[in-house]
Image 1 (spheres, rainbow, N blue to C red):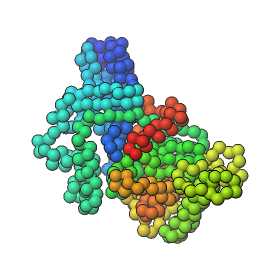
Image 2 (cartoon, rainbow, N blue to C red):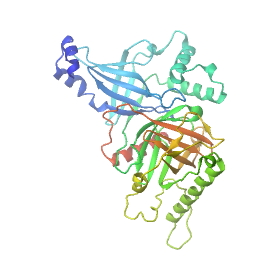
Image 3 (cartoon, rainbow, N blue to C red):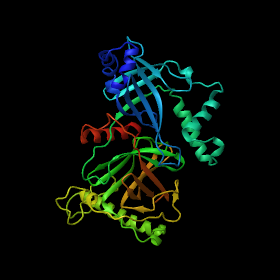
Image 4 (cartoon, rainbow, N blue to C red):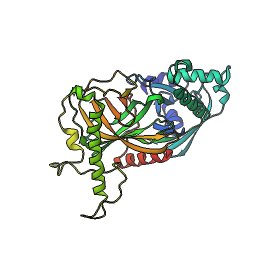
Length: 406
C-alpha cells in the first residue's frame, strides 16, 4: 500500500480505517468468480487496488486471434473516497460510475445490483446498444458477419446477456492445483469454437486424465461442462507429414484408440471375472489400466515425464480451422473425447478426437466427427487469491460447475 499513502493523506484516512471499512469487510469477494449468465458464464477477477476493490470481467480477444492478450472491463468498484464508509459503484455502461450494491449470499457466492440501470441506456436505444456491444464483443459490425447462423447466435447472446443489467450472482472458482507429474502447467486457456467465437477453458490434471472445463460457454455446450477429456495413457504416434494430411489415416489411428478405450471400459464394468461384460456407458470417466510395465507408477506420470521430441505437424485436408495460423510442430498427441450437443444442450455426446500438445502454452484438439480443429492458447494474466486450498476442494468445485448448467 506504500504507493497509496499519499492518496490516503489527501482524503484524511488512516491505514486502520482503510482496513476496517474496506479490506476486511470485502475480503471474501477477492479472487476468481463465474457469473451465473445461463449457458454463457464468464470470468470475473476481484482485486484490491490501492483505495479500491475492483471487479474486472475478463473477455477473450476477438475471434479468431486466440494468441492476443485478454481484454478487461470493470463491472463494479468499491472505494473509500468518502471517509466514513465504503461506497459501491456500478461501472457498467458508458456514462461512468453510478450507484450499486453488493450482497454476500454465502461464503463462496455474492451478488451485485445496479441501482441506476438508466445509466446503461443509450440515446439511440437498443439498436445503438447492440451496435456498441457487437463492436466491443466481436470487434466488427453485423454487416461484416455473412454467416446467418452466426448472426443468429450473436443476436441471441446480446438479448440474453443484456437483460441482466449487471445484476448478477457470482460463484467462486479456483485455479487447478499443479503436480510434478502434470503434462504442462495447468491453468486457463483461450480456445476457438467455430461460429461461437473464442471461449475460456480451464485445463486440469487428474492422474491419467486431463480435463478441459468451460468457464465461458454457448447454447450448445454451456459454461461449466467438460468440453474435452484426454486419456494420458493413450498416446497417438503420428505418421509422416504426407500421411498426416490424410483424414482417413488420422481417423484410423484415433478410432483404434477409441475402440480400445471402449473395450477397457466394458471389461471394467463386467459383473464378475470370466462373465460377459455388462452394458457400458463409453469411455467417459473410465480409469484405463496403465500400460504393461507401468506397475507402481503414478497414473499418468509415465506419459507426463517421458521425454518428447518435437515433430512436424499438419492438419488433415478437410479439417476446418478457425485460425489457419497454428503451430507446425508438436511434442505429443493423445486420444481424447470432445463433448458435442444440440442447441439447448440437447443429446450431449462424447465423441473421439485427437489432443495435440504444441508447447507449454498451446495445445489443440481435432474433433473427428465435426472435422474441425480448436486451437488453445494460455491466459498469462496474473490472477491472485485464486489457488485451490486442496485437490478435494477443486474436484468438488468442478462437479458443482457442471451441475450449475446441466
